[in-house]
Image (cartoon, rainbow, N blue to C red; front, side):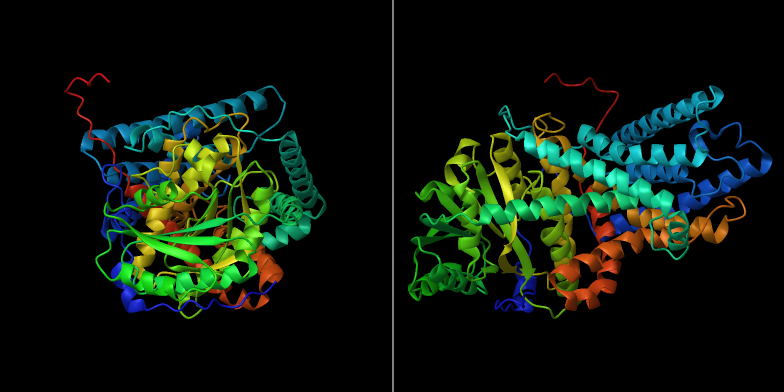
Length: 605
């Protein structure tokens, strides 16, 4: 299943001038904060971690920890392991201090985070104490501490959604349609994952223990890591079968190609040429429409010349003077009469056969959107190489696993096909927020349609040419999860919606985990280097396994399936995961929180 680099050639010097758009940080709900905010967070976090661990050492050394470990430490002398509750407290305090708002709102955020975490910690410890005194089971204090820290991953996004200034809730009442078979598949895969994880942990205890000592299994315990990966593998098996069966259909209706473009004169011709080449293998008629979105360069002129050179498709260029990609998309959708609209970014090119492969899934009338595999256009820079690994892992494997139980949350807007009538039914593309490409898929799901991600529909897209471009792109991408959750509150945790009940909450928790990855490694390094005498059970292997371990094993496994030659890029990708954590943290710091003044009465809504 090996793919070669795409034909799309880019000019780095041009891209550096064009990567930022009006959609980067939507006004009123986000802010372009400099890197100094994230750097200041990590420096402050490091200092507070040292102070907190010094206090822990004093309490343990004086014997006070055993009396006050219920909420603050959750550690008794000799229990060993990383003091995870101390980490969570320090992380929450630091985030509240660096939130983009005034001092009163920061205090409110901090109290909310710490208050919820205190309640959860007391609940875990109370249950542990009760079960122990009733002689039911003796739950180790470390397990109670770890359990409450897992809940903290949900406390963080929950608090942000309650305090931050985010997009308004979509007022349409969702009516998702998920077949019973999807829930059956999910239940079967969950059961298999639990059984396999428990079996391996018990039967191969010695091997598991040895693997932990060389940092091949994760620091949160082999059971959790094995469960997650076994679940992903089994659901991916179902997903591949579903995609293959759906792909067999022959469905080639007339297509509209919609290309929103803002200052894309440097590469839009390649995008148009790729559509003309792909049209050779697509039986139906294709009409291309470029929407020039307030460009200041020669985008219109270049696009018109490229369209005139096409032999397989017809085309036109229309003007959208109001800046904003969602605005341009809505204007294009309203202008085009075709039922199926292919959205392609002006820095992307599609491979031959891409259109026919993706369109086959629309033979199912409940499919509302389809996406593909966004390979990087080149493999020259380190960014290209880590992006290649990331794409195969994310879109070539984990998206397929979501296909297995109708759980695809969204597909990238670089290339996506929509059922036009369904898009109009849910109100078109949302404006003024990040993640409009995923948002439309969530709202289509709420209207009874679902999304298919087919990795055989290959296209090639521009990757960031500079670190500044990479940081802007990832901050925008990672910020979108909060915008999506806020705008789609109606489907969040809603029975009947696989994406709302299961996938979107998981993505919120995963965003919190990713934001905490770099800080917890810093915290662990400080604890291991300077406080091992206090926390006698600390080891370096579990912390290294957080970056290596199962992530390394799964990455190699996926690349062996798709592209074995890309395994040489794995070390760079594993280091990139730390940088990705840094960007995820920055995205949470870029959220805007409304100022709070406790001395003024609240306005009535």
